[in-house]
Image (tube, rainbow over all chains, first blue to last red; front, side, top):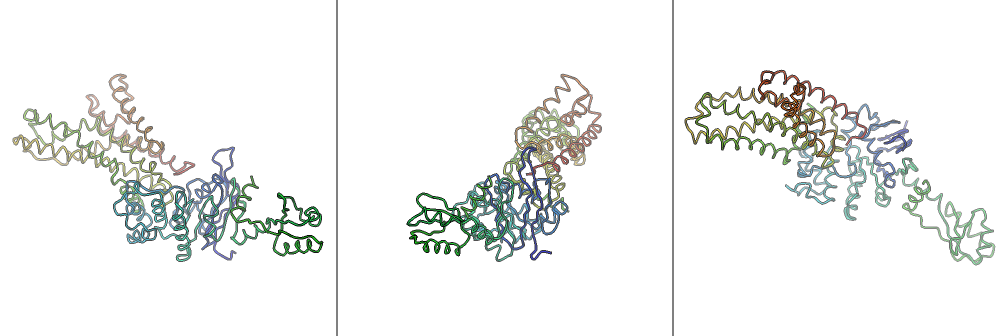
Length: 305
Length: 251
């Protein structure tokens, strides 16, 4: 029994395009209902492959995929009916207008004509008239692709690198839209990106993938806790050599003229300070290193390399 | 029902595409070129059942060159809609059965072929009216619509084999050149097999099915070639669908 309903669950998902190269290894993805799940990893880490497997664009080789509690392979149509997706570049017909592009899929999803107006309004493209899509800017195309993903009023939205090609204002707009969709309509969202800072402000859960392996999966709070485990503290005293001997348990190292050591919380920093002061050392600097999530992401993915 | 929805979706994609413009231009080309000739020689030509003669004489250029070329082009252009705009991913992640997507595309090709045949007939009709305006003594007989439709249906059935081969090629190759090149080369091989190599294999060659009934010595076997065409269609559609369904990477 699970406390919350799991929308996406993969177990031991593995895939290889060529025999010698394992693109994905044992991916256990778990996306809970109502979550905004950031699926992060550098380019070529396996994000699009995973998403392609989830949507049936690749025939899966090993492991299982369960979406809405149903085995994807045997319930492909039922599952896809409840999903809106955008995989990599916007998939739009350049010779058709925004409305016509949506009209191509409207009967496929069995939604009313009114829904086209609604989704165009949501993405701010209701006034594009007879302009065909090939004349749209990349930002407009991306927004129309999102409108297309929203057309079936999906319960799950899968967006693969949706910020690609968007300017900073476009990224902020998209972020607001995703938050709004999640909050107002309760849509579960899986959003992939190779830039943590782009998704950090909108996600509730994160999965970090690197070279086809999941390095981390959990809530943002869990990631922050994970971050604390590896936090660094900078120290500078009146006698750093003596400080090294006093703090031997922490294995301090020189970082330029100051010392650097690993600590696990603010209480430990206070204890270190006390030790130094009680041993008559003047403390000039006692500063936790600024390790933001971006740095942690880089650390995680480079340490695994 | 689902197939009809998928088919509707396919036909919507055709709006403003080269396939539609090609259908009109290619269908107009033959009748209007022959109009110039007919205007000169009409009094000598159309004596008995002039309407039906006019329409049936328009069949030869259609069967030999216009229809095969149109089929080769329309199959390639229709599939290129998805490849050019990289839209396969969206199609394949929408809730449609793979069989419906596949068949809807093939039906769209067949619809375009019918549209071409009917547009061709329309232009033949227009040229007939123009001829009649100049030579009022002609075209006073009844129009045998049934014979015209029968003629078109026969041409369409003869083209089914070729359209399924080209459909398969256009689905298999992402680029525009390969199916087009193979199609044109395939068509050129038909007269060579017929007149240069004089081989009987040509009777089983899909690119020659529309041509053969127009060639003396083969005209009597039109029904046989229609059967060959239908069998070819079944074989190549099966191959194409199996490949479409089992391809490792879709979209």
